[in-house]
Amino acid sequence: RRSDRSWFAMALLQKTRRLLEKLKAEASKGKVASCEETLVEIKLHLTSFAALPPRYEKTPTAAEELGLARECLEQAVVVSVQANDEQAFERNYLQLNTYYTDIKDDVIPASQQMLLLKGLNLLRLLVQNRIAEFHTELETIEPHVQNSSEHIKYVIQLEQSHMEGAYNKILDSSKSCPSPLYVSFAEKLIETVRDEICACSEEAYESLSLAEARQVMRFDTEEGLLAYAKEAGWVVKDGRVFFAAAEASTDKVELNSMDLIKNTLHYAKEIERIV
Image (cartoon, rainbow, N blue to C red; front, side):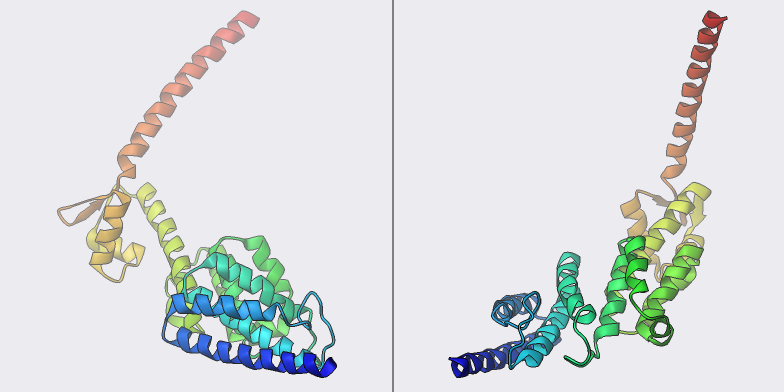
């Protein structure tokens, strides 16, 4: 029976390895739909591995099972980035992180992808504005690793720039990504920062010339600015951008002033009654 179980385990390992290689090939070609189908098949196979968490059985092939499962989940995280699926990223990373935190290096060697993916998860939390979780995750990484890993340092510097309001550094961040996997999350952070800059511009100016607006909002092309202006409801006329918030803010001030007058008169009447 033991030999039968060992044979079955080895056969399952070989089949799962073949599926993993297939997954990597599909991912390299950008076939996201095919990747997701292959991932489902891989995860079904992983449920038969007795050495994986939460069972942690000490099988003869435990090290191979744990190492292969970790590599499969690492690839699953990569696929979720390619699919632009943040929910799938979170699910896959939570499963993967168990292998990084609970399994010691003497059981399976440390993964060469670990810091890349840990940095990617930190960037995701930053983009989602989950700052408390960001710092909780960061505390699990040794200080010397934070200072030496290009992936971790990149995200830490982004978070510091965001806290300091150094938006120029963030807007240029996609040009210095330590991995192509970081680009999509970096671009989402850039979009968030640009929205903040545009909102401030609406409050600060009634209008800007196209050249000024493009410089302030850091658009690479005038077409990009015009597309954003159309979506935001701004008026572009005679080479200038007129912000919709200007008229709205005037109406808001007038409305607030009338409310203030009414409240003041009401309070005056109440005080007169009391006296």
